[in-house]
Every structure is written in C-alpha cells, then in structure tokens.
Length: 327
Image (tube, rainbow, N blue to C red; front, side, top):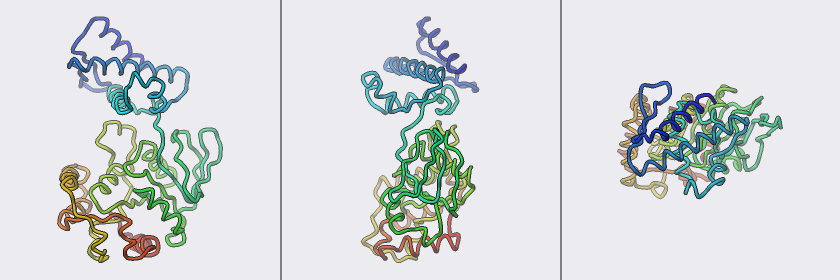
C-alpha cells in the first residue's frame, strides 16, 4: 500500500504543478514512463483513478475483479480494453503483480478430474465433474490441493476438454487433471496451472492444435505472454508439448479433409514465434514451426476423429505418454 500511496503523491504533485509532458519513474528501475501526447491526458487521469481504487481495496483488505471495476463506472472507462491497458500500465509502473493490488481477473477456464482443494472460504471443491468446474477467481487463496492423478493435461479448446471427459480419458492414461483456458488463456487459468505444478509436482502436458495459434497458446502457458504483467510468475516452464505436434501429421497419415492450408496470418505468426528468444532457444519447438511451414498446412485436434472417433483418447495420448514423446 505504501508504494501505491507514493505514486498517488507523485501524480498529485505533478498535476498541481501543471507538469506536461508527465514523467514518472518505474519503481526499482532507472527507466521512466512518459505521457506527452495531448490525447494521453485522459490516460493519466484514468491511471490516477485506478491507483486510488487500488489504494481503497488495500486499505479495506478487499478484492475486486477488472470486470467489477469496469461496471462500477462504465461511462468512465468506455470499454473493457481501456481498463485492461490501464491495469497493465499501473503494474508496470509500480513493478508489482496485479494480485498484490487486490485486483483480480474473472476466470473463464475449467478444471476436471482427480483433484480437490479448499477455496478461499475453506469450502471443499471436488473437480470430479462431467462438465468441469470454473476455476476460482482468487487462485492465491486456494489451499490443501489433493490428487491421485499421474498427469496434468492442459487442453487448448473446451470442445476437446469435454470430449476427453466424455471418452473417460482416465481409463486410457490413468487418473489425470484436465484444464482448459478455452483458447488463449486468462490470467487465472495460467496462475492455476502454475499453482498445480508448484503444489503437486505432476508432469504437465499441453494438447493444442497443430497450427501456429496452438503453439502460440502453448508458449503463453510455458514461457509467459509478451505482456510485462508476467512479473506475476504466471508461466509454467515445466509444461511439455505432447501434441498435436506438426511432426505427427505425416506419420499418422491424417486424411486430407482434416488438413487446412496455412493463411498469410498463420505464416506471419510462425515468423513472429520463430523470432522469440524462448522459441529460438528450444530447438525441438523451433523445428515444429519449421515443419508447419514446410507442410504448408495445419490440423486441429478434432482432425484426429477422421482416423477414428476415439483415436485421441484410445491411441494417440496413451502412446505419447507411454513413449514420453513430448517436447
């Protein structure tokens, strides 16, 4: 709270002096954050408003989600992305995780399988559900994780997540914990995965589409996003890429009707991914992107149903896990 108060005083002093352009030091750094364009004055005011909101939350020991803050004053923020960018700017300026400011995120991710834990109110949460349960908003307050699982299986899409539950995937690979962020993951899903790893130390395996976006989603979970908000330790470096690997497309003889041509957007994303240090330093992952470019096609996980409706559950995943064919 002291750091928030320090920056509130800095902003108030600058405004009272009529300083413009406005410069504020990034905490713990010799760098400055600068606002100089005329249209950035409103951004400064929004930042000040958010600092005051965070101070009130810390002072009263309460928490709020970004969504709640937005709906408290829709006319002020205009739209959710404006608030999101202001939160990111504030965490960069203060150089502390958002959770330390008592501002959380609303979960969209699901978890299912052999797992139970206590929520923030001390209530037991059992994840054995036929549809999965929503990952709690306040991941930091979860405790007493218990599981008989052998693996954590991180699934890109909700549809695949539900199919694995319906197929009773545990009958083929043993007890497991299933997680999905429903595409590009929210902060809570990423933090939940990291907490599971920290608490249970189970092998974490990612199942994503054999396309640039699937590998990009894998990279967000494993290495962190390109957003500096990742000082929150949201990444899980121990996560491994079990499939669908582009190098599997030819050996599996996936039917042509399951293959889609790469778009220009796909090729641009491949180029972007191959330039990231986290990818260039991982030769095997880099090679998967090279294979994608060479094949000039992509395959979604659902494409495996063209081989057999339960090929993913009965054959592909058991074989991959038994041979430890992950990256």
